[in-house]
Length: 107
Length: 121
Image (cartoon, rainbow over all chains, first blue to last red; front, side, top):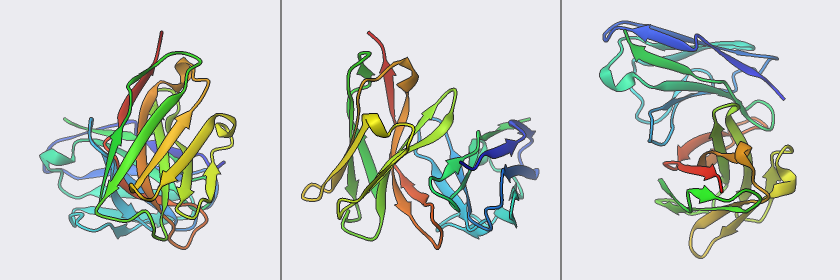
């Protein structure tokens, strides 16, 4: 099983600032990585797949990069609705596995 | 596409957890697979299993002996049964649509709202 490690566990950012989240895979997963946003009590939302492709309706302030074992999700200017938990997930190998999540909170 | 979950939030130890997911805005009869994922405090997000409308099923090896996923195409629903539950099965359970895009594994493009299931007597 591929282990996904996210850092930091909590990211404190002021509204309008940039936030950068990291996800590392225990072995190469090519570009087969997705990012999800999860607000408490709501369904998780797919943000990014293929490491850098925004899902339908996702604002341009969300961008993903990386390949192989190291990936980044950047939120260029944090809006109030962006404070949530973010998960990465590899789907290069079956079964897909998730990181432990990064909580983005208001500084 | 919307996935609406239903089922009890409290299950007794050694009992069977049963959840239903009703899909609207899309047919189950597509190339997609339909999955269950759970979130526990200790293990984070854990994939439970998936089903295709053709009847093909895959389960997480760690849970395979206790899980049954089934589909009712006439009602556009799929369901999860997890037997012999213990406190370790206390979690938020999600149904989700799985999409395979050129890889062996699947990503999840639509999710249900989640059901908090507590295992307790």
